[in-house]
Length: 128
Image (cartoon, one colour):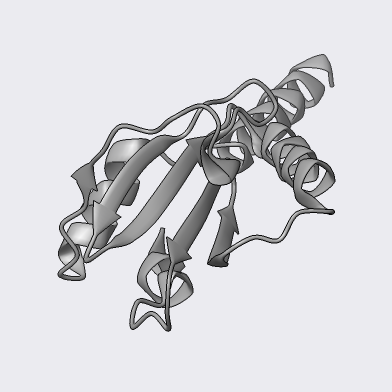
C-alpha cells in the first residue's frame, strides 16, 4: 500500500511540475519568426512606461516596423500575475499609447504601436 501511495505522490508531483513549465524568450522569438516577424533587439531606457521593471523583472525589448515589443519572462505564472498588477497600479493614472497585452504561463508581452497595427500577437502566439 505504501508503494502505491508513493507512486501516486510522485505522479502528482510530476504532473504539477509539468503544468508550471514556462515559456522561454527563445521560443517566443522563434514563434514570431515562424510567422514572418523578425524582431530586432533594441536598447530600452529605464524611464519608459513599458520598459520598467515589473515584479523585479526587466523586459527584453524588440522592434519590428516601428512597433515595439516588451517581453517579460517571469519565473512562473504567479510572478507574471504580480508583474501585471505592478504595471496596472503604476500606470492607472497615466495616459498610455496604443498597446496590446499578451499573457501566457510565465510570459507577458506589451506590443506598443503609434497607429493601428497589422500584427495580432494573440494569433501569432496562440500555439506557444
